[in-house]
Image (cartoon, rainbow over all chains, first blue to last red; front, side, top):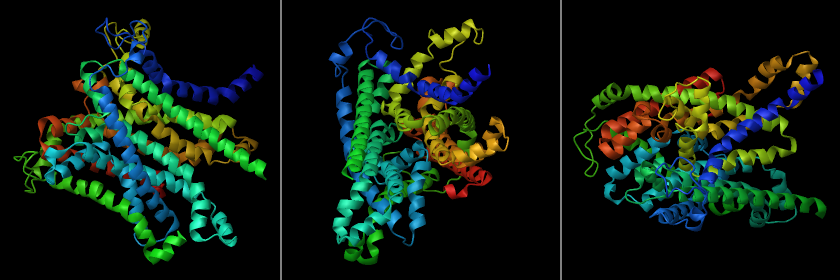
Length: 273
Length: 287
């Protein structure tokens, strides 16, 4: 008893943790499963009927779905580029400089993350309407909104990487006669880069997945989440599950490649010594 | 940085921060102000021509009188979901921080990975899991935990389940960050001083993880209160939350002043609760 009891005691926390992790994956299993569902014979779209490859072979069959995907990807890329640049600059200012209004700036970065999306979305709509842009909602208003809520997350991600940086490395480079630009591009930037990359990935996924804020400011433009929302009223086409599964695989591949690259780099450094 | 300083002098920081500050001022702060004026405007206008500001405070009274059940439901559902998130999230964050060993990074990645599948798609899949002829409902029925004609979909249970699932990572990450900082030696020291595992948890681990608990509950509770996706997709008209109401007033009804008033009430409630909670938990440095 005691040995078994102790073994359970030691591994109970890990086992429970793995169960929670498993729970988080249930919907992803369902999405992957439903991507092989043949829904053409049945009206019940929330039950697995029979196996088919059709959804994977014709992912763009539902009218307007791939067009909405294209819109989401272009908004996502543009929002990621702009918010990553603006946010990274702000993070450098907040970590490396002591200036008047710094705590106000910190608060301003924090506030959008603490505001419910529905308040941000509706207030932006109220602004656009008050500015007489009520009839021109679309791609650009969505983009403006996405950049707005991505900035805070970029600042927070880059800031935490930057504040963990050992400033002695920069001092060492300067001691070895590197000028300011060389120090920045050869020492500071490469060290901060993983944080910037993580921030960009986060920004893209936030933008790509956003529904609430987008829905307020989209006008007639349809993003992928809005397509899914519209389709959900009638019954979602099974191809939506194909896209969901593909996004999951793409993200996982990206993260694994990043991890492998950083491990290889770490090993390279060790052997270079 | 010093290079920038040489070129721009002492204003380098302001030049770096200016784009972000401007963007957030114009598209975040200013809209909130615009929302405030809309909430005090005459509801007689319309969304295309705009509204005239008449300082009509009755909008708030009317919004509260008409929609208080939605506000109550939002707080209740979000509160319960946050509680479940705290339990589930603590278990997983604890396992990653103390028991995962060299699989720590992999487990952290696995926590975030499911969330790259569009959250609407994942929420819809709960429809299938909780369906009337699904495995969960039938098991509960055979155990007599659910009436023969009982269902989960379109009930508050489904909405809370959806909220719990959707906002779990917001709980796990802050909890993990704060658990990870705890020195395992403190736990060993407590054990040396004859504290049993339960005492060690409540007297050592839990108090030290409080910043993560506060951060996680806020990051979960705030978006869950404003959410209307789960209530819309998994619930019924009787389980609608304040978000559903605000969304409908803005997009289908077109009554901006009352919708804005309701948004401001939601925001004010959240800020008040956050301030009270943060003060009570004694971690004011969090904000």
